[in-house]
Length: 342
Image (spheres, rainbow, N blue to C red):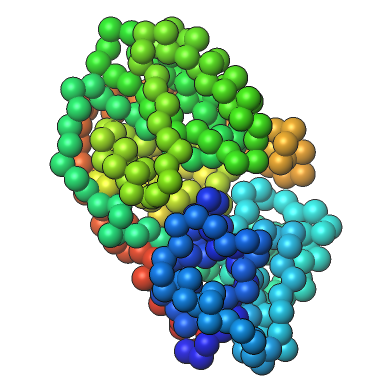
């Protein structure tokens, strides 16, 4: 594989940034950062940033970013690598997706969405991954059964439904806890605090059964919390990939997920507790989604039953999840890219 130009955000503060760092660390590329690099960046990636003085415009270019912002640089093959959650694109998004020579997505679900929207550009599936040097099983068993929901606070992530289900599934005397690692750099901190207060003021919250953890400066922090938990709960209405779900699997934990969208690339009945969906509904949260497309609906009762079932089973090891995480490593992501650029 020849060297390529990689245009991406270099930061550990966003999902796109984490993906970019893991790819840049494993492949021969010159980096054109989107925005200012920030956070804990590996030395090998910093060296590539520092050594980039003049780009060869005749190399292939890969831009890892949103589907509405895929302007690439160069005279050679131009590739847009994008992650999205909904099933419908607007006019601007379609224009950007059609502007590149090739589109990379991380799941076959996303590939179908591209085709269903009438975009005929070549589409390749490049799955994302997990770092096994950070996320791996560590023997730990708490007295209580601990559910963990980790990731951005967004309506599509279903934190409201998770808290509702937890309160309906359990009693304050049950030996069970819900840990929430909920944050979003693009939301007012006062809003996040109000949501925390809402959750604390539920019956299980008042009983001290709901706790907040993070955010963490390094991924090792969330990996430690994942190993302290008993089960991951990620019933997203829409998901491009779901880094935390795969990371939880790598730690050997059961995961509860919706049977829909991007995480179906690696979530199945053998390694996950799947929540059946009941069709789709217009995606609206008043912040990022304004009825442009659709996302999944699910019955909260199904989530309640899944949580009760896992609680009754007690602490278990998700052996098939560990096997899945080994298959979907960042090394394998890099190898897929290497082959596509040969």
